Image 1 (cartoon, rainbow, N blue to C red):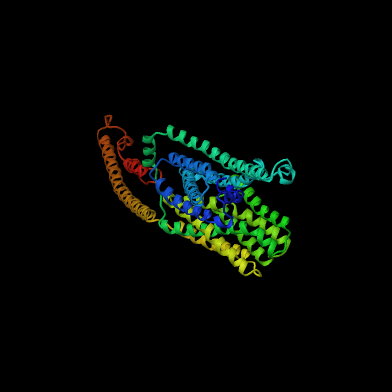
Image 2 (cartoon, one colour; image 1 turned 30 degrees about the horizontal axis):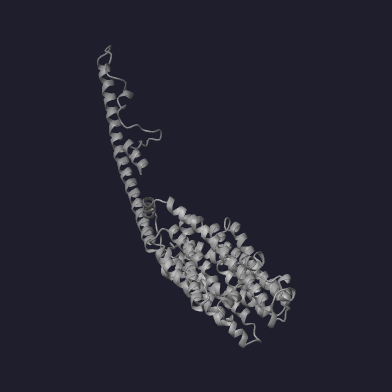
Length: 496
């Protein structure tokens, strides 16, 4: 809502500082510069500060800037306030994504989809809040022609007051909402234990991919292309449909609404899809949908059916890429504050640069569908970058390769030990076999001698035990004549 409220209230801001709309376009630059700074500083601070405290402070800064903007009567002051809001939102954007990753880890997919769905929902609610719910337009009964009882100066004063009150209310309501939400973060911070947080940080294991920084640079480029294409199409499809495709203004506005409507609806559905689909699968489906639909739009750039169908599919395909990309990269490497700020800055750069290039080119070459070509080129770029990222992400790290080598060495040692044990067992078996045969021969000799002695001394009863009891202490022999294995050898085999 903080981002989207600027659009519908931009004429009121210009009037508030006594400038034309074209003369205060630098406020967008101020907000973008603040967003860059906030993303960078927030990514650094997030690794050293309590996340709840940092997000609470940034939301207080956003609310304070929204409260002060309606009272800014100087262009420079307005630009400074916009820069303050931009920096606060940069901290929120970076910190919110990292906080969800740190909280939910491998289960962060649906929560990230819900977070980014709230962005689309806020962008949808803010214009309605500014222009409809708060009556940010002049009603027929307030028109100067119906105010016959008032002088012309009084009429202008009434209209200006009407505008100022609703212009002020739109910012105050959103600022109050953000301020109330900031209190929840401060409550969470007050209930947290520093010792427990430090212990949790110490016990937390960080897994970094072998090409961690290469992955971050590739993700920077990936989000640069994706967000730039999203903002370019959403910003220029209305003008493109009117000038290039010769559509009526109402139909062109409907086409623009269709893009953002399908975008927001698919982000809402992605909350459920993230529970049953892997992030990589969702990215792959989105890339295929955006590439096919952008190719369809580029080939049939003026056909009404292709514009309607292609715009709906393109908007739905673009919806889940950003949150799914964050969930996907977290599976392979740890995303901390500085890492998150890098790809958030890449997204913001794409949001600034690609529309700034595509818009003037479309005006300079009105006979070419530059907007559709931009969508196609960026879709192809994302389709090329994702397999490259996947290749680098799945390469084994040095520690994993070392572990695998140690595992192979351990298996080889175990195999050699088993072979050695088998050889020792066979040698022991041979020794015991020879001993058994020697004992058997001794038993036969003793039995023969006893028989001879008994024959020589008739009537004398032998005091010796039976022959079968003589060998009871010897190693038992199984039916086929092979000796049993020693007991300690059997026990050793079980322990191995």
